[in-house]
Length: 144
Ligand code: 4NP
Image (cartoon, rainbow, N blue to C red; front, side, top):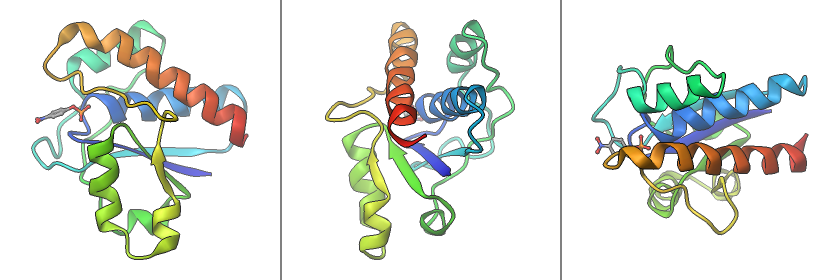
């Protein structure tokens, strides 16, 4: 399965989601490919936010080599599932969908819950890590 994680900047939440989902899938010997992208273009080409790199490393996951990129329409063709962090991401991605097949691939990572943007609050990175991990575990339990 190919899964794309999406947030706004592609430097805080979706790099964590990519790293955590890939880590958990690998541990279960699932042949899953995980990537991430953003809907905003401010950080293209940069690595993840150092606070995300740190909380991932503290949990045994290296996300430091990821590179920020923008979501593109062809991602609807490349990926089976597009998992977004919050409702702004959801409406931004759905606005780019070309048809019902595209729309069906898009959902919130967490059911009826958002992963809040931690960019302006250092204290949010740990709880955001836990929320994303919870969402990834639930997703794997459902789709493995
Ligand atoms: P992310 O957080 O969407 O979790 O990567 C953000 C990072 C940067 C910005 C916004 C959100 N920004 O406006 O630069």
